[in-house]
Length: 98
Image (tube, rainbow, N blue to C red):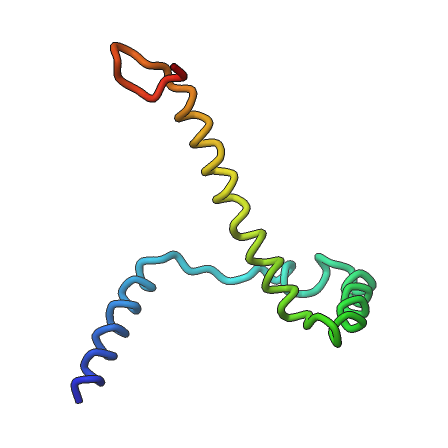
């Protein structure tokens, strides 16, 4: 009974946050298969089928998506650190280069 109450509370919070986020539908030109030619997708599928006994293609796809997801954050962090290190020291305040 208490567990159901906690789960309902968590579900209500998640639903409220989800309602605040924008929602969209995929355009038909993106889902119809015309964006990537079928020959290219067949070639990629054949390549993944060949290596799947040694390295599962689902794991390869998840790693690829994870790297592409993290790449913008790593780049933003690098740029922010570069900007922070190049702030001059004024009147004894700031990181300065020395």
